[in-house]
Length: 355
Ligand SMILES: *Cc1c(COP(=O)(O)O)cnc(C)c1O
Image (cartoon, rainbow, N blue to C red; front, side, top):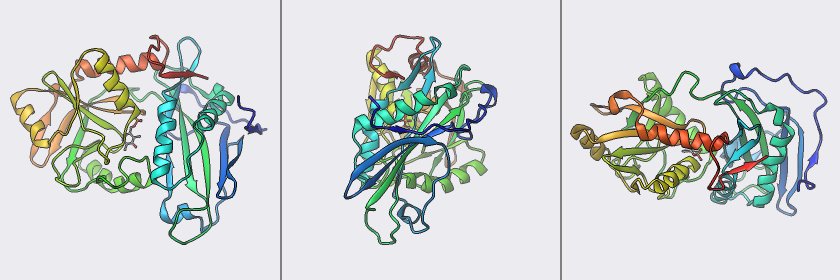
């Protein structure tokens, strides 16, 4: 299957970190995948080589105008010893949707999937074993043409690196404190919000630092037009349970279509729990909290899977959710997804790909 990928193995493999010392995004495996694009050749020269620095001309377009994007997914070592990628097909699809918005030429979906499976397979000994750990897969595409004009680059570099990461909840699943930002916005419809564009993260740093100084873990953005409807948490989509209804904002152009969000919605629908993709205003949330019907709030994303929210701060309002404890549904969703990822529950939905 991978006869199109040229493989050059490293001659100096690195010592592998201990599972117990793993953090997020600090250690990288022995190899990386690379592929080039040129207007006259298309995507070409798919290859795997030793992990190492890239050399870029200072005029390279990406360094000036941020024509850059990424994906993020994980490989898990199951309790049965198998290594599984979680919903790679959805990530491939999103990679090409993001590419389109950034004028980056699409890559054959099969080639993208192969780049992940072949690289993970080669570095499979790097997939950690301890409970909750995983191998993070980071595909990235950058404009590689040395040219200062403002137009789409005529050449690109697609690369994939792998990073063994520790358990997100090494100290237990502690509900986080979130600032509902009344000052900054993340995206507006028509902008880059629904693309996994690197520039979205550059834009989020200032509000995020601001919130950190105030003692909050994350920022929840409101919509940029009315400053009224909740959007997402910058690295996670958001869900609320008000009474018996689970609510998450609709994918209307400014929100990243999370794979975890999609998985949670699929599970809720399977379980017969009402789930709505609809606008929800911060006023509705404050009111529900006042009436005692704001039952659970949680974020969804590849890094944490599910992140319970214990407190929300909005202007002079302080909302405590479920007495700061993890909600019952939040826990059930987390357990169900993690079970599929580690192969302790059967994958009845075709969500995993064994490497
Ligand atoms: C990646 C990302 C998410 C989460 O998406 P998953 O596919 O669930 O990991 C949410 N919001 C933003 C802005 C993101 O970049």
